[in-house]
Length: 222
Image (cartoon, rainbow, N blue to C red; front, side, top):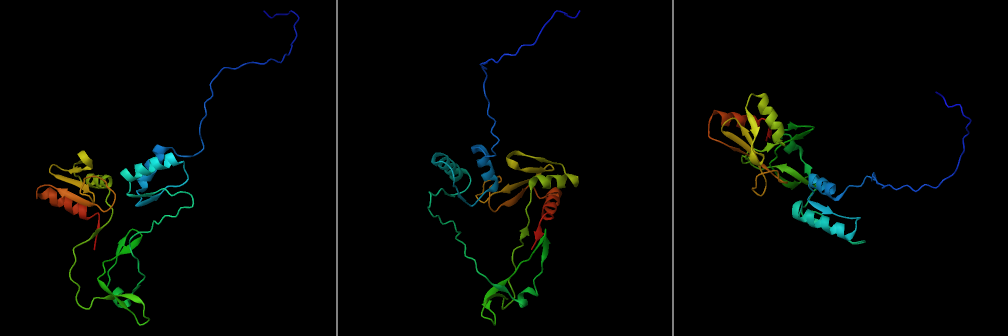
């Protein structure tokens, strides 16, 4: 039943005390310490300069990078100058026509690479130039050019019908007897930064040579 008794609406202003907690969500876009460490590790710099931070945070990040990422980390003070040039010397030279006429290039992605045996001399314009060797160049050891990713090579071997799986320490077990692994510049196994070697282990059997041929096919031979 509807209430048919007379009624009216009355308005009053009241002050109400609300007891609740406030949560601030930071969408500023800055990275926290853990994210910064992860990003720097992925970049894997040879030299690092840290600027724009409070002294305590800068020193903490500097020590972390020195111990885990790279040996040359700088945290200059305001108006302090640091020298981050490399120890390598670069020289500008020309490639002579006589030299380039006998160079065999091989396609590598969007670029072309080649092995060159030459000596530094001067052209008629008195500029440094790479000239052919006066005699026959001595044979050089084969050079394999490329960047092998173990995960991609695993898929490649699977497509060839090879039973393959990851083993401990980042190694790749190929078939029953053969194992592949990356060896870093310090001789430690794993993905260390810098020059690396691919180590293939196993008895000299049919599977060994087959896996080795598959491995060679992933590189360009110079």
